Amino acid sequence: MAPLHLGGPVNVAAIGFSLLVVYLVCQAVYNRFFHPLSKYPGPFLHHISYLPRAHKLMQGRLAFYVADLHKDYGPVVRLSPNELAFSSPQAWRDIYGHKKVGEPEFPKSDLFYKVFTFLPLAIVNADRDEHALLRRQLSHGFSDRSMKEQEPIIGGYVDLLVKRIRENLEKAPNQSVNMLQWLNWTAFDIIGDLGFGAAGGFGCLEGSSYHPWVKIITDNMRQSAFMQALSSVGLRGSIQWIAKRASAAGQKHRAIIREKVEQRLTLGAPRPDFLEGLIRKKEELGLDLGRLQMNASLIIIAGSDTTSTLLCGTLFFITTNPEVLKKLVHEVRTTFKSDDEITLMKRQSIDLHACCAKRGSSRISSGDNRTSQSSTPRGWCGRWQPSAGGLFQWAINHDKRFWTDPFKFAPERFLGDERYKNDQLDAMQPFGVGPRNCIGQNLAYAEMRLVLAKLVYNFDMRIADEARGWLDGQMAYTSWVKRDLPIYMTPAVRE
Image 1 (cartoon, helix red, strand yellow):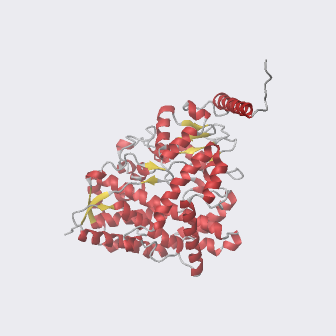
Image 2: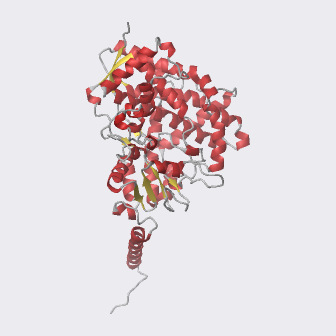
C-alpha cells in the first residue's frame, strides 16, 4: 500500500474541509439538542443556524415571518441558536421595563445594536449610565416648555404642507396627490429644523422635491439591515471593512451629518431644538464631534421616517374605511371653527381623531423588524435564558391571543367598544417601555395629531383605486420601505 502523504496540498485541503464539516455537524447537534434554548419551539433550521433569520431580514420580511412563527409555535419561538422571540404583554415589562434598585438592566445585544464597531456610540446603544446622561440632556428638547417654543416652527411647516397641496390641486385638480411624498417632505423638514437649526428644514416643502439625503437615509437603512444579517452568520469582520470603506450610502450619510452638526455648532445661540442640551454639556459629557454626529443621526432617522410612516398608514386606513373617515371629518370640522384653532399644544378632546393618530393605525402600520436585547441569567417571563431576544412589533400587534380581528382597522377598540372588551391594550407599545422608551413620543403624537387634523379639516379625501393594495408585499427593514400613496384631495367646502 502506498504511504499517505498528509502534507500534500490536496490532502491538507481535504482534511481541512472534513474537519470543518465535522465541526459544523457537532455545532448543529449541540444547538439542537444540548443548547440551553433547545427546549423552546421553532423550525429545525432556526435551532441550528442564523441563516434563516438572516435570509428573511435581507428580504425585508422578517417582521411578518416572526408573526407567522408565533402563530404556529406559540408566544415563545426560537428564532436563531441564541435568540428567542416573545409575544406577550408581560415580556414588554420583563425585558424592557424599569428594574428594581440595584438590579442590572438587560444590555443591548452587540449583534444587533453594535454592528459597526468603528462608529461612536449614541443614546440607542450606550450603556446604562451613559444612556441616562444623554437622555437627561436630550430631554430638554422634548419638554413641554420646548414644545411650546417649537410650536410655531412645526405649525409653520404643517401650514406650508396645506398650502403646497392647495397649489398642486390648482395646477392639476383632477389628479391624485402622492401623499407619501408630501408627508415625507413635511417630516424631514420639521426634523431638519428641530434637529440642526436649519431654517427651512431640508427645503423639501419649499421646493416640492426630495433633498438627496432622504434617499441616502433610506438606502443606508437597507444596507445596514443587510450588513446586520451578514454579521450574524459569521462575517462580522468583513462587514466592518465593507461598511468603513465601501458603503457609499453610509459614507454619504455620515458626511452630511457631519456638515449639518458643524453648521449647528456655529449658530451658537440657544434655540429650542434637540441638540441644544447635548451641545450645552458637550465638554462635561465628553461629546466630541463624532458622538454628536451619531446622536444627531439617530434623531433625524427616528423623528422623520417613523412619523411619515404612521401618517401614511393613518391616511391609508381612514380612506379605505369610509365610515371611520366620515366620523373623523365630522368630529374635526365641528370642533374647530377655523384652521387657526388647530395648534400643536391644544389638547384636542376628539376621541376618534386622537385614536386614529395615536393608536388606531400604529398597531397595524408598525413594521419594526427587531427590538432584540441580550439577557442576564435572571431570565424573562419566568424563564432562564442566556441569550438574545425581544419582541417584534408587527407580530405582537397582530397576535390573535391579544386582539379581536387582529388585522382589522378599528379605532373603536380603544374607545371602550364592547366588541373589543377582551383586547389586551398593553400588548401594543409602539414607543417601547421602560428607561429606553422613545424620548420623543409626546412630540410625535402632537405632531401627528396636528397634521391629521389639518388635512381632515382642509380637504376631502378619497383613495385612488391603484392604492387599495398599498400594504400588500411591502418590505420592512429598520422601518417600512413605503410605496407611493395616491389620494384624491379636494378642498373642503364649509357652509
